Image (tube, rainbow, N blue to C red):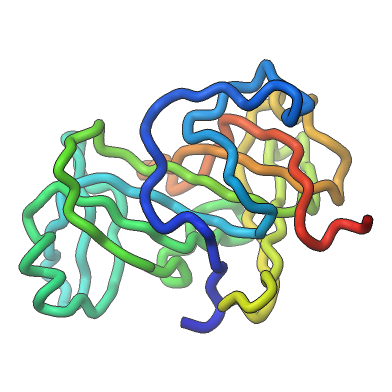
Length: 208
């Protein structure tokens, strides 16, 4: 697919709290849920765990948790995929896009893969992203993350994600223009992505 970010993450991150490696991370007090990525590439992934359900609208599906729908999406799923996942607990990997107000753009967000999952972690949606800090708006409590194309990647043009962040986290951010790795969660009721942890990261196109 054109216009999507390439990531080295091909399997869902382990749902465990892990501390950032001391010595590599300038802020070792930050605890990352999924651990830092191995590469220095740009990516943005929204991981959603839930039961795959088919909606009444043709071509629409949703991943559902115990408290209701987590994320609805439109996609032409092959029959063999439906046979494996429909009605079963699964995880979906999406390439997220946000609108200018920070809400998830459901039309632009793309499904990359959906896989049945044997384990049953708590249903939910989690963000892992690595990019360049483009803007910080303390009045709106948002930060903007720029995702750029990678060498030999699928993404052809850069895009930005507008994310909510608590003030305490924003006060510890590196200067605008720096690379960062962040983790967060998706809140279905408000349709917003909320940052929970940020650590500085060197990216492949940083000057030597």
